[in-house]
Length: 264
Image (cartoon, rainbow, N blue to C red; front, top):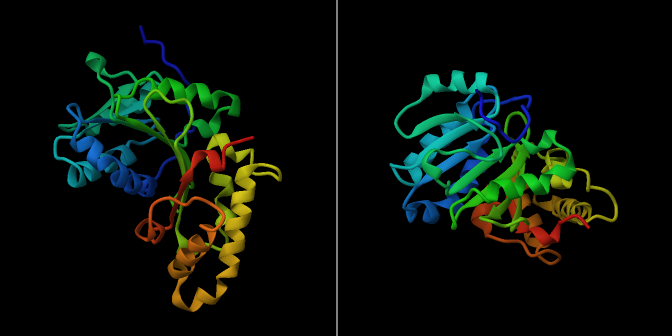
């Protein structure tokens, strides 16, 4: 009998390198945590119609974090799991499951990546889904949940610590060379925010101010989009508590505390 799982089958759209921006940020955050872990297992929840992004994550983490890290792709569609098992290799595996994050021997993952999964759920289901996943994490672990476009140029996500119900941070990551306005991220906001981008909500105010600082630094255009982006983020700091530094900003990233944009 097929075991009971928590969640619904998603459309499963995916493309090679679609999640590169998320992986890059996770490598920045996760390195010391995974390197110090006694059981370095990472879960990619809801990898979609093909397991390519899970495989890419595995090779990135093995190369840049530690050579014995394990990655498990979990999917609620058993057909997708069967197909993914064809690319299993030492340290990379796939399993049938959902938000309950089933791992053998009661193992607890050090990190969970859940991308383009909650986008297809109701906003009312987000908090419960977060809690289900964070309850499965190792004590020092974290969840990264968010959304991106089909080719990975527009991404945003939230990060939650183990056992927590509320995110710690919110991040947007954009390909600045193809950017007209920072608010272009709006269609790719996490489910918890996508319907809140309206006047009176904090995410709306944040994106409006970001657009203003972007437009206000049009004099930087001759120096390139990246320099303009960094200048816009610097200006944004006068109104918002921007985290990280120019190294991350130059990648098209901006991370802020969750409460700055949390729904009212």
